[in-house]
Structure formats: structure tokens, C-alpha cells
Image (cartoon, rainbow over all chains, first blue to last red; front, side, top):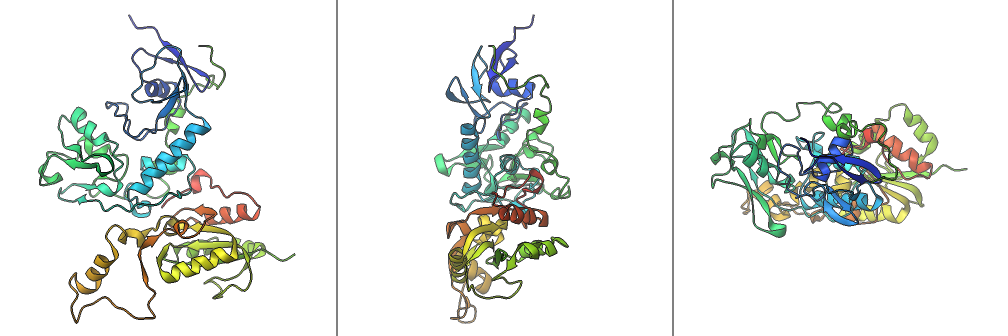
Length: 246
Length: 179
């Protein structure tokens, strides 16, 4: 026997969720895109990047870790939340080193794509230019902490999808950085190119060597369509934005 | 009625953005109908003699000369656009920022250990390098940004036309690129 659907609203439009779904899961099913950088549907959520922050009954909540409860009113695409998400993306750009012009991940990078989706031509926050370590010890996988946004996807992928524990965070606060579980660097770990952790990075931090620049400019995933367009394409035409009857 | 004037400069950049400006092909005929070129490396005019409407800034500030030129542009241009990755976030020249100026220079010119025969060049004619490369907006107020490395000719064309029409230059999705 299946549990009854939960009804709630997103920006005034009625949405149904299956019991136990988080807001982001229910919205993905309904074709409503909530911006995110640290969430993948097949991995446990981390609530790390806060980009999916919505207002639930007027209070901030990260949509990837907040379960749907009956009749909640979710605000997602509002001028206020759009402005705050813009700032999060800008802060991620200035607190790392993101060399889009020559980064292997350019055109397939979720952070860059998010900035494109938001129409961000530049940030006027002050660039930090941090000095971060790279790890080129592994023959097939390169770790460049300059672009790391501390989303934790590699940590979760390694643990839950690969059954390993290659990655983790070390230090706290502004000094938090990605680390690997070997004093010899990535080469000392049991990571393999086929691992989910080697492919899950949303930015150019973990890249498989010898695969860069394979797709020509103009044909890369986000050259073709904005991030989130695949989810929005699922939206039923009748699900217009209107006052919800929940 | 006289045409609005356009000034351009390349600071710590590679002239790629200027090349991209020229890459508008036959639309350059339309451009000269829209603007008069003022101070620019394209016409080799070295100094402003009057205020201009639009300043096109390529490159960030890596040395004191760049800062002087940028201040001069801010002073004379009604609207200043930062064009390309280097003007917007320092770009390739800013790769030295996390490392530090001294280490960069000593490694480059003296293998890391300067001595009587291997030293960092110095001369009054060499512009003094700044401690780090600064994006244009960290030195002066910038009105608009045209990202790209370089921005495509279409993006530059679109941006200049919008500006001339008195609108905020916002690029459509296909033209908004950071690479």
C-alpha cells in the first residue's frame, strides 16, 4: 500500500510529494528547479552549499535536507532568494581561484553554469587569491584545491557509492580544506578512475587526467542549455504558477 | 550631431579583447558610424584631450603604469566597461597572486637564489610591479562588465550597442561566457 501524497505549494503552485521526500526531491519530480551545487539525487544530501535554501513557511531551510510536510508554503524563485543565491555564488568565486578561461571543467562546471543561469557578468566582491595545495601524485586523477567549493560530494560519493573513504575535510571554518586518507596524497589511496568520487566533482577540483578539453567549445553541456533546464523540461504544462489550494 | 567617443586600453592583458573587438568583421563599418575612436592603441592616440562617452578597459592592474592609465580612463570616461577575464578578475596575470611577487620574480630571473650574476632586473624605465594583480573594479569604479576570454565579437558588439542605446548591457545566455 503506498502512502498518500503530501500536498504543498512552491511559489504558489500546488505540488505533490511522496511520503519521505525532501523538498528538492519533490520539486525535481514536479519539474521545478531549485539551484544546487552539492546535491545529487543518488547520493545522501549534505546541506553543504546552502544554494538550495528556500523559505519554508517564512523560515530559511535548505531544500535538500528538509522533508516535505503537509501544506507547507515554500518560496523558491523570489527576488530575495535569487539575490541571496547570487551572493553565495559570488562568494564561492572570490574565495577560491577559478581560472575559467583555461580550466578543464569550463563548460561543464556547475559553479560556472550557475553564474550563467543567474546572468552574473562579474562579481565586485574582493578576490581572495588563496594559496591552496594541488595534489598531482596520482597517475590518473588530479586534485586541484584551488577550485574546491567544499561541497563534500566526493566525500559522500566515496563513502556511499564506492564503499571507500578516500576524501574528507580537515581544519575548521575558513581554513577547511579537502584532504585524502593517505599521507602520500591521492596516489596513496585506493581511488580508481571508475569511482563515482572521481566523476562527481561539480567544479574542476577532481579531474581524470587525459580527458580535458575533449568536447569542443560550443558543444559542452552548459553551452547548449542552462543548468537545471533538464529538470524544468519535466514540468507539466498545466502546473502554472497560481495560488495554491493546499 | 557629433558621434559619441569610444576610448580603449589594454592594461595587464594580452590584447585578445582588442582582437575580439576587431573580430566583429564587417560590422566595424557600422561601429565607426556609431562611435568616433578616441584614445586607443588601435589609432595610437596616447592621451585624452576631452571627455569621452565610453571607455573599454582590457586587463587588470599589474603595475603602477596600469593604475595611472586606469585612473585616467575613469577621469575621462562617462561609462567604463571592464572587458574580459583579466579586467574582471585578474585573469592569467593574476596567477602570480597566490604565490607572491618576490618568489615569482626570483624564481623566474634567478632560479630562486639571486646572486651577483642572477638578479631581478631593475631600471627606472620599468614600471613598478604591484604586490599583486588587481581586477579593474578594485582600483576604480566600473560601470559594466563584459566577461569572456576574450568576450566573443558578438558579445562585444551586443554590449556596445546596448550601451549606446542607453540600456544596461546584459548578455543573452549564449553570449555570457567566462572562457
